[in-house]
Figure 1 (cartoon, rainbow, N blue to C red):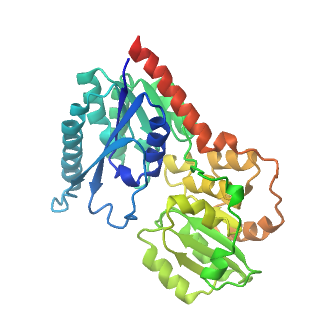
Figure 2 (tube, rainbow, N blue to C red):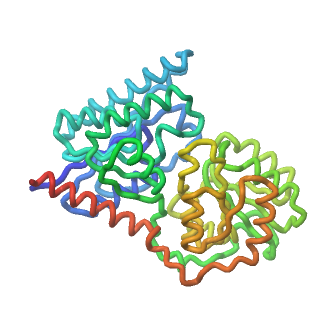
Figure 3 (tube, rainbow, N blue to C red):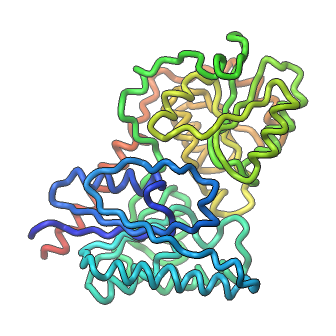
Length: 387
């Protein structure tokens, strides 16, 4: 068999989607695999996103710009037209590639992926980056329709990938047994993180005294991430030598700028590029990972920031959610608190005496190990295609 052509489909701008790029990079190291990718840029959705693309290797990536259809006022009609537009464009471009494997990264692009599989005889991988039918802000009708379509598609899916064991168990329990692989959202460490020594970057950048403790939040600045709880806690905490630094972008940026002006121990930092993030945040003391479990997808989540903190060598304060708690306890990374100000404040003082395990081996949650699992999955699929 010659070169194996793999088509990645997503409703996101793939050039800025770190997880998809890491997977493409991992696969592209195999000289027998040629990766193609088609993504969507929604101008309204992506307007606040960082403009810098993530570098990649040996991959043909096409990003299609689409309208947000904001002139359509009836929400369900707007959603339907958007889905049809996205999948029409993915199909028109995707069918030309004649891929042996279609790797679908979200529910919005699953219809196109399914049609390409049926027309081309491709193998179909469904890579659910979250529990698609139970995400935050989703109404019951949307949830029902997504779950119904996933159930219909389930028998056509050859391999299933997801981001946490609990999400995998939910899919298997609701739709039936399926070959599955857990690929965590671990950061790709290009240089050994032990070589990236802390240089008190945050202390210098914000003119914070060297003896003061730095707590950081990395991620989207949106509701549902415990940002309000963090602000309330650091505003009222007696010990003002404890500082919180927010790194990210989103709808709460303006609110955080105002709070940083009014409070000397609250700070906002611009987005840091993925390739520099681990090195920079090592100059903090503690990473905070608070998730408001308003949806089942959030409840079962394992957010990127958890692994970014772990590989930066930070102590971690995290929400008492099952998957996060499992990782924190297994690798002795930090302490658990409830998602309220009182519990968080106690954790802030308690974390000072917490001793991280020096012998903790993080290989099982490293990107290197996730890449091995991904390549093993593909090697098994390739054997089926050859046969």
